[in-house]
Length: 109
Image 1 (cartoon, rainbow, N blue to C red):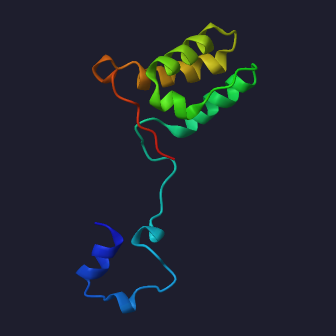
Image 2 (cartoon, rainbow, N blue to C red; image 1 turned 30 degrees about the vertical axis):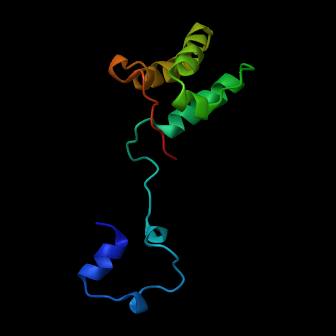
């Protein structure tokens, strides 16, 4: 139930709500460790590790272009870096889904 409907269910009117809040979503607290379509922290870690090897990874393209994502993951696996290889292997599961190969991987921050 969203915040606005929660207030309405308790019989509160707009006049009793916090006037500093512009939208009901202002009160939403997101847990950054909550499961997501693509774990953004893992993707950011991947991009940082790749940068350490002189490779620029565009995370938005990773989410929107499966071929680009698979290429970057393959490059990462070919490097002699155990940590990068482990991160790439974890991300591979999010991008190697033949059923959804025509769709972009969803990522949220």
